Amino acid sequence: MCDKAINPTHAPLYPIREVSRLTGVNSVTLRAWERRYGLIRPQRTPKGHRLYARHDIDRIELILQWLNRGVPVSQVHDLLDQPASVEIPVPEAGDWPNQREQLILAVEALDLERLETLYNQALALYPVAICLHELWQPAILQLEERWNGQLGALLQQRLLEGFLRTRIGTRLYHANLASHGPQLLITHLSEESGALWPLLFALAAIDSGYRVVLLDAPLSPGELGLAVNRLRFSALVLASGQAERSELIRRQLPRLADQLSVPVCLTGPITRIRAGELLDSGVELLSDDPVQSVSRLRPLLSQ
View (tube, helix red, strand yellow):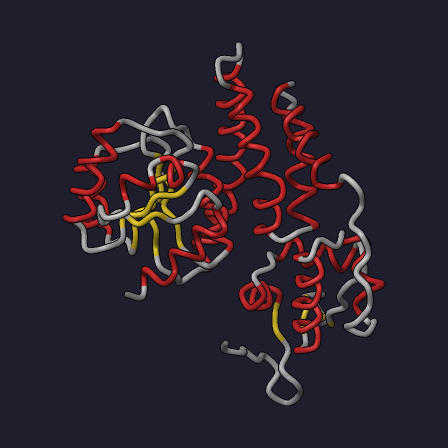
């Protein structure tokens, strides 16, 4: 880890963008932890810009430890200065299940205002990885089960895709400007698979420091190969929640993986559905979980 000091005459101080890079917590969340819960108390420059000391960064990492163990953010403050052996309180009953149900109901009711509130609230209070694991991934899995043959299902799916594409696209734009990490090409395998799983993976990837090009529509294997070679991507990540066509899985993807010099990866539920057919194909199976997929991608890029 490289510490970037901005005040050479005193203990090192860090701007919020650097703290976000070091800890993996986005700046919106850091501000919410300060303003709403008093969890951190950064110093300020004469112009009001936040400056964080090393002990602030250590405190942020401790906050993450409590959140990762299921403690609601509203209860973290009382735990931060306690001995490490303090008993962890039971999380608020039904917190994440209730949020998931509210999210599902908002989608089914086509309630964009409620959807906006739930999206902003979750990302303001919790790291991206927790929001994906506890809220968005399980909610989308439940929605996809409900959408099977249901009247209005396509409308709900397209509405949710459009909502997430706009919000995640904005985060992606700003993250790409600040990041110098490997560049990924992300898209969905087919029109039938939809854009939800590529969007979730893209959110996890930019949160981990990758640069991302996210395609709104799928390309043929030949065009994907051309894009990777011409634009020099570090990996191609294809996402799907469907089984997809056998010809695509058994022939076209393995052929593409054999032709390209970078990893060709799959993420989303398809990694479980088609695992047996792709084990020795050269196609890298990541995970059905976006955060775990990003974690498994990293060692592939260093090979």
